Length: 175
Image 1 (spheres, rainbow, N blue to C red):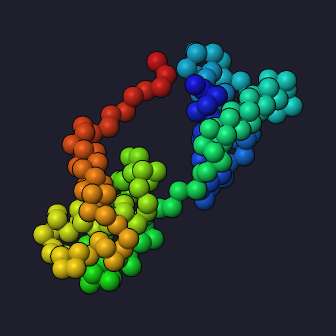
Image 2: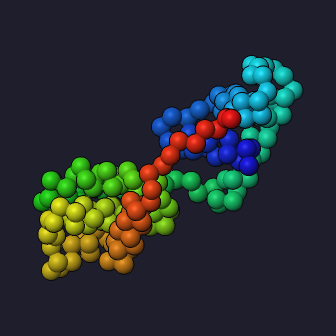
Image 3: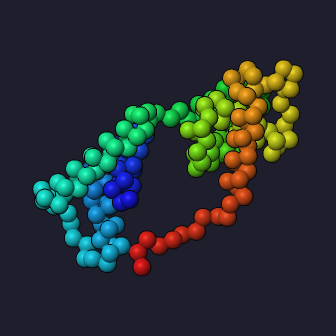
């Protein structure tokens, strides 16, 4: 699990705007393991056999993850659609709320279950409902944005479930 977690973090950092070097990930995970096991925290020598083995395991796990994902790791974020949709619908007052909902949607599986256009429509719809802003029904506004009502409803359900969960609590990693 530790190897996969480190590899997932390394791969995720490569896919976003802040790539990390393998060395950084290995050193941080080594330090966390030392703390978790109540071992003395000693610097990991980048020229040691242990470091070399950890780096090899990191690369192997990354390749395995990529293979399981079919080397498809690009996820389009819904944010880039929100401003355009709200401008088209002439409802700029919903921008901040829709943006916040889109940020929160990244804590769910919505970005891999639906196209970004559908998630964007879902957060626009949820924001409009929250502020009781009417959206055009004839013709249905979501049709213009390549979305289905069922997808929008599911996005709203998932977000409502997310907000019904208790607030996250800090859990110490070390004892």
